[in-house]
Image (tube, rainbow over all chains, first blue to last red):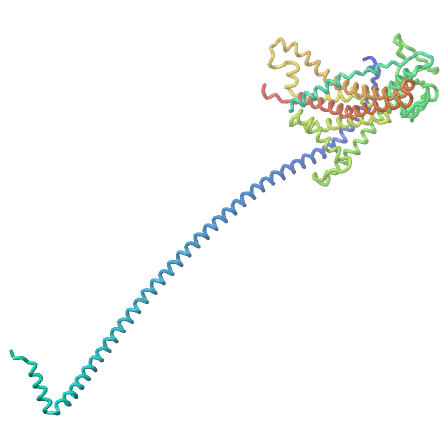
Length: 166
Length: 360
C-alpha cells in the first residue's frame, strides 16, 4: 500500500483526466455517436428487410394459393362447360336422329301409299283390259264356232247328253 | 447458459483479481558497492514499471538510452524544460535560480549542492514542486488517444455513405468490438438506458485495451499498470455511477427495503462502504494485473542472464523465450480480459444505479 501511495502521481492523474475527457468528448461526438447510430440503423434495416421478406413470402404463398384456387375453379368450370356441351350435342344429335327417323318413316309411308295406289290403278286397268280381251276373244270364238250349223247341233246334243233329267 | 456464462465470468474476475503483484515489492537496494545481477534486474524491472520523465528505450551499461520528454513544473510560475537537463549533472539542474533534483523518479527542490534529506524510513523530506510533466505514461496516453481517434473516426466515416457501407481494413476489427461492448456489456447490464453511457464505456474499453496492448510492445509503456491512471478511470466510474443513480439506488444504500428495521441500520454502513470498494476494486484489479504481467514477462526474459551458467547460453535463451512466449499469449488474453472486466463491471455498477425496481 505504501508503494502504491508512493507511486501515485497527481501529474499523471491530471493528464489522464484531461486525456480521458478529451477522448470521451471527441470520440463521443465524432465516432461513437455516428457508429452507434449507423449500427442501429443497419440493424433496423436488416430486421425491416427480414420482416418485409417474410411478408413477401406470405404474400407470395397467398398469391400462389389464390392462383391455384383460380386454376382449380377454371378447371371445374371448363369441366362443367364441356359436360354441358356434350349433353347439348347428344341432345341435338338425338333430336336430329329422331326427326330424321320420323321424316324417313313419313316418306316411306307416303311412298308405300303411292305404290299401293299405283298398283291398284294398274291392276284395275289390267282387269279391264283382260275382261275386254276375254269378251273379244269369247265373241270371236263364239262367232267362229257357230258358223257351222252342224256343230251347233252337235254341241247342243252333247250338252244335252250331260244333262240328266232326273 | 446465461448462468454458466455469468459464473465463468465471476470466476475469472476473482482469479485475476487475486493475482498477486509480488514483484512490485522488489525493493531497490540503496546500499553502495556493486549490485548483484539479480538486484540489478530487480531495479530494472522496477524502473520499467514506474512512470519516467525520460523515454527509455533500452539500457546500455549504467545508462538508460532514449529521448528526453518535457518537464512541466508549477513552482512560482510555470517552468518548462527538457528532462534531458537532469542527465547532465547527476539529476541536479537549475531553472530560474531554483535547483531541482531528480531522485528515484521524482523531482525535489534542493539547494545548489543537490542535498536530499531523509526521514527515518529513508524517504526524502525535500519539498516537491507541482509536477505536470509529459512523462512516458502521458506520452503513451497521448499516443493511444491519437490511435483511437484515427481508428474510430475513420470507422465513423465509413458509415457516412450509408449504414450498409461495410467497414474495411481496421474497421472490420473495430466494428465487432463496438458491437461486443454494446451487446455483451452495456445492454445486458444497463438495459434500455444503455445509450447515454455508451460513449464512456466504449472510450474506456478501447483506451484500456489499446494501452494494455501498447504495454506489450517493446516500447514498454506501463500505463494501465500505474495507480494514477487506474485511479482516474475508477473515479470516472464512481462519479458516473453516483451522479446518474436514481432514488432506488440511494434507498437501497441507506434504507434497504424488505429487511427488518435493525438490519437496515446494519446494512447502511456496509452499503456505503460498498459504494467505494466497488470502484476501488476496479482500480486495484487493473493496476495489479497489468503490473504483475509486466513483472513476470520481464522476470522471464531475465532468465537469459540469470541462468546462463546453469543452462548454457543457448539453453537459457531457449527456456526464457519459450516461457516468455507462453506468458505473452496469456498477457494478450489478459490485455483484453482486463479491458473487458473493467468495462463490464463499470456497466454493471451503472446498471445497478439506474435500475428501476418495479417490484417495490
